[in-house]
Length: 203
Image (tube, rainbow, N blue to C red; front, side, top):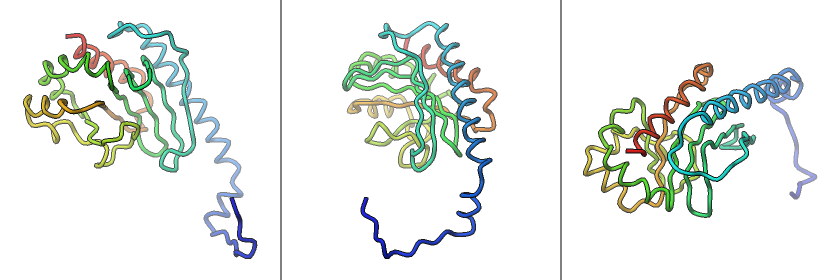
């Protein structure tokens, strides 16, 4: 990166307070450890649940970063399989300042395999409280703003509408979210949401 040596650099009062604050970063490290432990505990519980389809053995780990839309995040993909354009994933995400979310992500062959069950079980999907549907054309966005996720029942107004929505899709993402302050229910809620998705896909 080229730097203009003549450019004037100034710090706002707020920026300077943050620069001098060592407690925040130490707290952030503690939060990071706790979120990772929480998600790994969820993975352990999910490992005891029946699966929808045979999946390759994967090493359970929590991925993390500091810059999804400018903020830190944590991701657990379990159970999951990513093979080129074929995706079967139950993805749990914690986004700093936003939410925990539980997402069923299907693309390629897994989507084609499970599309009949998704169509058959429209009524069950429509009755899932707080179910969101990704309406984006890009499958690797995770935020819940209106250009990415909308409530399922706001987008889909009947079984025919759902079948039409699925007809030309190369991926589908269904998600449920909870507030960060409900962190102590992440494991229980994560297992519950997975069981609901599994029941729909297994029919």
